[in-house]
Image (cartoon, rainbow, N blue to C red; front, side, top):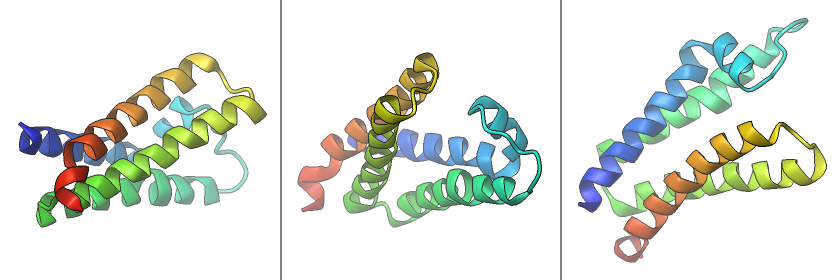
Length: 120
């Protein structure tokens, strides 16, 4: 069961990353980010929201080792934590924070809880 969950979570990671990697303007709109002025924002979306997660998911599938899945879980933990801090300091739209943060927290929990014991 853990193996199926790992593969599903890795594929979701790749899928979410592909939005940032291949469709940064769409991703910017979904995240309420502005892309006017400089194109550096699009570059950042392709890199940090896109390519980073695409390659992390592919690497986890390729390595097929619990520690690889735990590391993706930690990355999602950091993203979810960033959203919590943002709620306190930035006051973003709560609905979007709960949606995106909830997905990140769920993936983090599934990957860490499902693999930590086998990874250490």
